[in-house]
Image 1 (cartoon, helix red, strand yellow):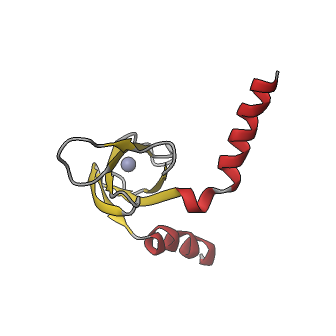
Image 2 (image 1 turned 60 degrees about the vertical axis):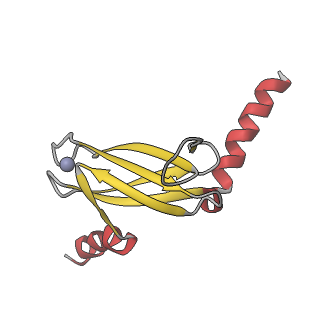
Length: 113
Ligand SMILES: [Zn+2]
């Protein structure tokens, strides 16, 4: 019983302290142009790299569209971090990186129409 309680409090904890522990990447699907966001949990989703590589930690995320564009292409994001969990380099397959401003821009346009 107490074990279950512990698990639920862990989930609650990670949900409330979101900003400091999460890295977001914004991408645009190369096929349909849909803008997508993926979130990397810096405490739970990083893979330590002990061999030669570009960083100390590595994360790979598969990003799928909402389905609204009838495009089901997977956009794959690979991100490398240093020991301070700062971004070192990043790669995207099936799309391109965009800024947060670009990601949010279209919503403003839609609202204005
Ligand atoms: Zn797409």
